[in-house]
Image (cartoon, rainbow, N blue to C red; front, side, top):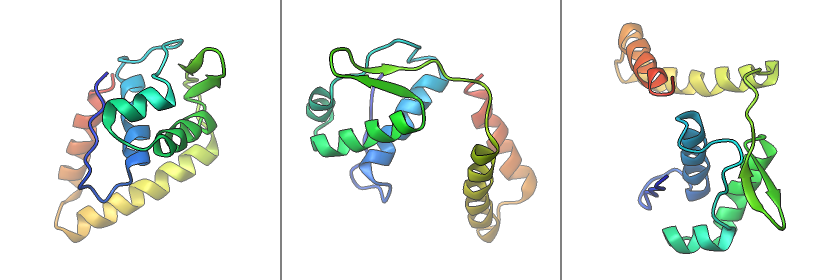
Length: 124
């Protein structure tokens, strides 16, 4: 899996890293039990601070995507296909922002849903 950081983006680097790892898991590029590079190695590979990688890994661990073991490093977890009410509330909150932004820029419901379907199909 290739990590591509957009240094000019308004999105913080640790969020970009977290999102790309989650996308890799969703697309099957990273599978249960796969090792991620060490914090130090990932930082060197993509040219960022170790603390930035550590923050992304900590968030991934907190969200259940990875396990961090001192001897084995960061490993991809088996991801449960069950989701919680809390997750759905967070999803609604995030989507609400994107829908509001799209609507204010003139994107209609049909266009928005088509984009959602197109992206969703990438993860099947």
